[in-house]
Amino acid sequence: MIRTKLILERFDKDYRLLEKRERVSRSFLLQFIELLYCAHAQIQQVAPYVMTDVDGNPQDIDSDTDNTVRQRGMKANLQVGSSAGYGRVLFNVGIYGDYSALDWHALEADMVGIQVGTGVVAVTSIDYALGTRIVNGSGPGEFEYGGCDLLYMVIADPNGEFTIRRYFTNNSGGGITVEEVGIYAVGTEWDNSAARHVWPFCITRDLTGGVAVADTEILRVTYVPQITV
Amino acid sequence: MERKSNSEVRARQNSRIIREEEIKYLLQPGEVGATLEMTVRDSQGEITEHRGPMLSKSFVRQFIELLFTQMYQVGDPGCGLTGYDVRDTGNVVRTICASGFNFDSDAGAGVLTHGIIVGTGNTAATIDDFVIETLINEGVGGGQLQYSAVTFGAPAADAAVSQFTITRDFANGSGGPITVNECGLYVQGYVYNTPYFFMTIRDVIGGGIAIPNGKTLTLNYRPQATA
Picture 1 (tube, one colour):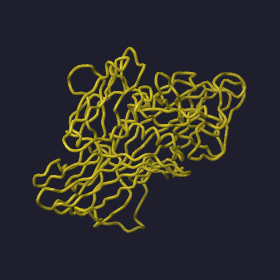
Picture 2 (cartoon, rainbow over the protein chains, first blue to last red; picture 1 turned 180 degrees about the vertical axis):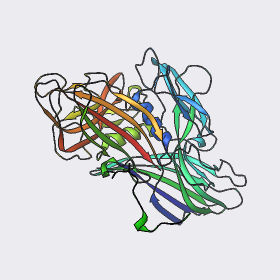
Picture 3 (tube, rainbow over the protein chains, first blue to last red; picture 1 turned 90 degrees about the horizontal axis):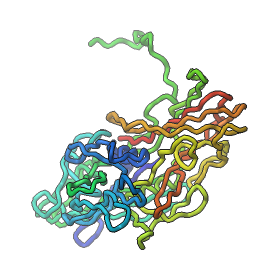
Picture 4 (cartoon, rainbow over the protein chains, first blue to last red; picture 1 turned 90 degrees about the vertical axis):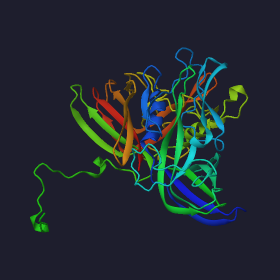
């Protein structure tokens, strides 16, 4: 089975460690299981599976890439790696037979990967978003989201793990208390239209007990999924 | 409401003791795993043996490697990008990438490349297992089982657990009894233009489960997440 470590570290502006908390992540959500279901059952565009995105809206999701060719399988489902802030990130939702016809759709980078918020409502497996997400920026109550990194697999019998982490910089001019953290992962629908067919889905949510991050400080949030036999 | 003393507490007439293996919540909060359920039926559909749901013990390394491949969006070596090396069920390391095909376990009848697979091996699982120890082949010959198509139950959740179901039937028309000692899940992983297959779960069944001739074993794997 998989257990996941959750590590919260607070640094000053010179990257001196001020505080570190480490515990087991308690809450993988329905959307994680749904994305795995779409992959295992090979849900096709003609009969998509409906998931609830982080805005509470139903969205058609599939594992399809092309109804006719299906030679190559570019598909961003389950992606959590992302770049920083409001930068545009393109996610592959499918392909038309060769690389001349990749089908990409965009999200802002901060909407994919590790998230932080101020919500304190207890977690349930059917949560579809953080309670109160802290948005990207440098205004009051805002964090500047760094890129969401993944570090490579480390496997040594009986364990295997990889690391997902993100830095949040407080340049808001005041303190911010982080009460919840989570991961938003990508789900897509194959379609060659210009409409958006990629959405973020909340796959984990954890309450922190409150981590106070003063102005100019940096919060590093790390998830480490570990498999043990 | 008046509180009754212990001596006044009565069990409802229709209550029954729940055996440990029947408890739905087998994982601790935050764990991701799977449960395993096994049912043997005769030719009339009558249940002759039932076990579980019980905790599937052994997600093996290929599961987390495929999960990493998708979460990281490992690039396709077919267009010059760096893929990720994963050992397939043929004991060959394949360089795979993120794709819509990863985790595909939607196998048809008689297909042994992916889906739920059974065997007779009983060596304890390790994280490095990449194949069923001793595969039971498809067919009606001695020691063979007929593999049905894999079917899926859609995701469901309550406040604490979410899950979906992967099911396969194994019919014994071999003329003799067969004991299944191990089972696992094979899935597809994507390499340029070619499917390869990887084992993500392997479980050894304590004591084995016997399938008399003419009976059918149904296996349910239910991947679960807990909050």
